[in-house]
Length: 289
Picture 1 (cartoon, helix red, strand yellow):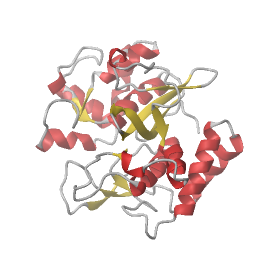
Picture 2 (picture 1 turned 135 degrees about the vertical axis):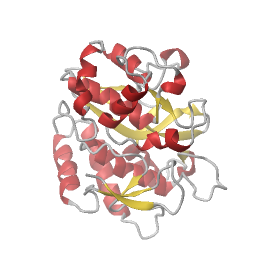
Picture 3 (picture 1 turned 120 degrees about the vertical axis):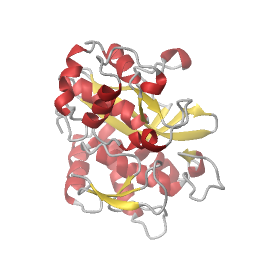
């Protein structure tokens, strides 16, 4: 895949010109995009109604449209927290990825789990990678460097692990699946952690790597909220291939991307079972054009 080309999700559309005024350096771009989004749970403000519904802005063009309607100023002009677009890590990352692609820099989103938000629990998370001419550099654009002991703009191995890495560790019995997810609460109506959750994130990882940077509550194909009856062998296969691809195996890269394009259990075909935190059960199927 050509990661300098906008996907349908990262395309800024009519608002592309806003990116022309951004800094040319990576930290500068990250600082600007970080100030445009406020996390719907971790931002320190409780959002409801139409404001909470902003988390379902799949498209960068829609995120920028919301920002401009509310603020109407260049992106580098600081926004008060309450004036930012409500979103999550996926939106922080996709805005940054979109800005880099606009400037001709290869960039992509990476889905997995971060160990640095809560002691003893690994939260679902999305970070960015960009190609610096020699290698893929991982950056968490949501983070302020002053708050973390590791380099957030060139992340070392360890603090963030891809969903594929975590799944293979889980399958090998090397880690506790209940310490990976969106919520460690064992008494919640739907346990948002554990093996089923990790497995679904392997499928998100593959979709994002292929330019389908979907919301983390879009569900399709072989995804399931249980492991019983799920095709675990298929998930094992794509996880192994993605890890091999990350280690430089070009044959694995081609094979896993071909699987995504050809296998209906993997391919996102435009229809999602949407389980948005802004909604309430019963959830429903939506068509995404």
